[in-house]
Image (cartoon, rainbow, N blue to C red; front, side, top):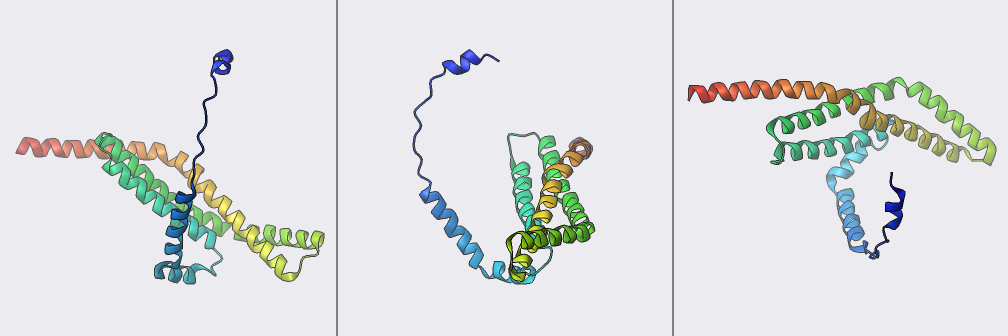
Length: 188
């Protein structure tokens, strides 16, 4: 690497950017969503769930995946093969990671509870925490563990495992569609 070329570059003047309008807009939008009947009713149903972090992570992934699938299917800059394969990859990754997440979180529930309880006990012993504070620490620890598991599965393990499978299925699907289109064109 040519370090002298990097050092020779003079720093450019930076421009101060004001994000107050953007942050106000995001806050207003999130406030409207949070106050909507659908959100309030949904949180009433899952708010006390022991799987709250898993449910929220899955909901977030569903929205993100839906947007990615739509973008991939409508992107005219990509070939038909690329659009189908990328959308298939996103959909398969979501489906497999959701099933795997709920399975792993359920399987680890006993271990998660033991770790969270031990954490709460240690924190109470160190800091003289009340029973309510200890319970809050334990709940937070459980949620943190579930979130780490969800994120690891959704963002790393499943995409790495699914991409080769989706590429293979995408190639087979586009070959099938191409042959079908060719036969239709020949009959016309």
